[in-house]
Image 1 (spheres, helix red, strand yellow):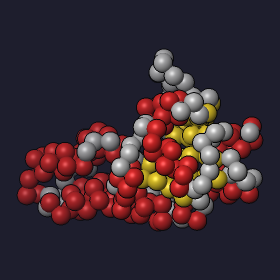
Image 2: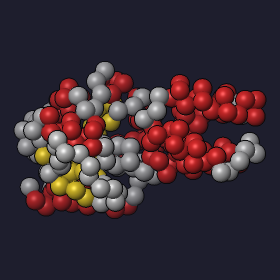
Image 3: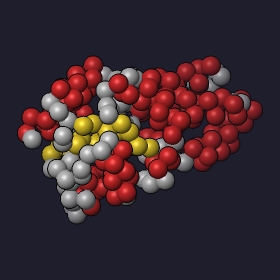
Image 4: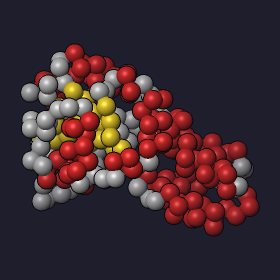
Length: 215
């Protein structure tokens, strides 16, 4: 069966929206300025800023007004507890499964946190497997994590597709393995000159539907 490798954060699920909701609730709970939400979103960097650096910067800014335990809860469980799966994404994954595709999630991040997102949204019942960078000791865009994903579901890399929102982690990773790819743009322009995705889609359901309808 053909293999479809899918990114998790800000591809299958809107991780940034979940983090924003959790951070907004945290500010309100501790009577901190609600306008700080944009500062927090920038600091978080869509989850790419190392968590210890985020925690330290937040502690420096808020001092005793924000307990360390509250910061830790936000960073460990904030997005995972609030993330949701869009119905259009659920339908597209179901269509892919019915069409004979093997779907596997390939994500950077911490195992406990990423698995919580997968299980909380029901993605564990819609894909055939997943690999998480912390667990396998390899990160995107490195080729080994994509090879580990294929091995995890017993599918060959030949003919596989990669779908993701990150030009560097997802599309460059696919390009290095000569795999076809769909970039989930969310309205952003493509700015890389050295490589390009096979296709650009505005959202993940459109990306999945494109792959399964053209292959």
